[in-house]
Amino acid sequence: MRILALITARGGSKRLPGKNIKLLGGKPLIEWSIEVAKNIPAICDILVSNDSEDIAEVARNTGALVPWLRPADLASDTASAVDVALHALNWYERENGKVDGLMLLQPTSPFRTHETVSRGIILFHENSACPIIGVSPAKSHPMWCFRINDNKMQPFIEGGGLHLRSQ
Image (cartoon, rainbow, N blue to C red; front, side, top):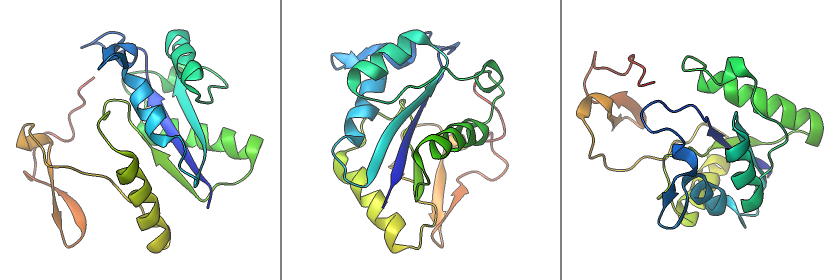
């Protein structure tokens, strides 16, 4: 199985400028996501899509593949995660061949474990490559939370603020 780990790390955070390379526990935030994906046999590469040479340098030094800076139209507040992922996936498969799955590792979720990532890949394989989303108990406002109902994620508060962008 060939899984591409994709880390999307935009440089233009308005609430916390430079957040993806700010130190957390002595290392840049993005480094946590790169390191968790290392040494997992099913992961063929760890690709970082970003628009900042500072982020790119940290990611390369940590062992990630950073072949380009993300185009400006995919680095805006309104760019969709799907478009960013498709841009990265299309480039990767054109250059390196097809993959069996794409794993999105957001740098703002640094506390996932190697075991959790590995278990997600096993579930992906066991369930005929259906989408797998890692979740954990929330401590944030319920308007931004989900519940599991019949094996599907649903907004915790129907009609809540999920349609509002935080950027």
